[in-house]
Length: 473
Ligand SMILES: Nc1ncnc2c1ncn2[C@@H]1O[C@H](COP(=O)(O)OP(=O)(O)OP(=O)(O)O)[C@@H](O)[C@H]1O
Image (cartoon, rainbow, N blue to C red):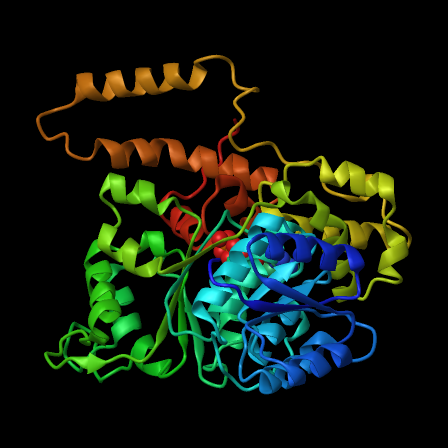
């Protein structure tokens, strides 16, 4: 921050005003203070301002309502909104009302300084739009109050209205699909289609046709023209879930959509224009997939113009009480707040939750059935699942020995025609793995997929391909 600028801080907390005064005046700026929206408006009408830092909760008129008036009075000075009560709806509301950035209290002074610097440099609002009027249905709420989730809300709010493609990463069950739906819901495209697709367990031709459509006679069975998702979602958004599983040939076609905004239906020659926003999600490490040659580096680069990482639940255990209460409310459980006590919360916070929020939701549903309306106890919850990386129970090297013996045997018996060793290895090992994991989850496939760290679609395909064996362990 070089040239001297006039900055108005609107907050009824003296410590925040004092902090900003010190921070900004030491950078050479003039700092004005107002403790209410009404006072702020008087100042804004009486003199030019270069930046406004505006709290949401104020005595009298709230910050979000006052924001457009302050902007009108200042001829569009950039406004950074601050709040201690961050949820996604507030973040989006602030951005839609015209804020250029959003800070959740408590924030680090260096983050605040960066936001001010950026706002003074860029100025103005980022995303002009009508106020958001679509109330989310209950099940689509992204719940969380941890700093990590606040950061996610901020990113969603800032990116929702642009047409940039977004890459959402995070472990299974962290809410990637919810985040993608929220981006669409809060975008200008919200009245247009939002179509999610998970390409796992579909053959390459089927995925290609699903995405781009096909013309009559393109392949056996294609007896009429069929529109793909890129046409069906016209002017809307597509979620490509499990993008890491997309075959390389389709990746090339997707790159063309991203770079040139066009695609060709299967069996067609004419290019069609795409006006669809692409949101992609994955629980795979795409950098590693690039190293391994299964994911195109240029596509990763294009997709991650904006990238949002959903943190695992074990890194934000402070969200657990809120999430439990939320799930109990959705289940219609009597007085959810009183149904959980601090010792239960402490015990649940110590768990690893490898299946993340999905696992927590399933566990709460399970506990609520057992508790039948009384306060929940730890014993109502399913037992904690093993860390999927733990090898503690395995006798040392037993698996290695078994694999060595199997491989040696195969190689010894092997003829020159040995070309499918990996497939035969999978066929030998998978049925047992699947049987034991499914037995452990009482046949619950979603839970088994979480444990295996794979998508449910992939599990479905594995079960079909390697039917779980029935012999005892
Ligand atoms: N922050 C959250 N607030 C409320 N519910 C959540 C949250 N995160 C996840 N959930 C719930 O957990 C379940 C899994 O969420 P979602 O399908 O979005 O996860 P995902 O990351 O896409 O998982 P996967 O990679 O396995 O597809 C859903 O029932 C969703 O409603």
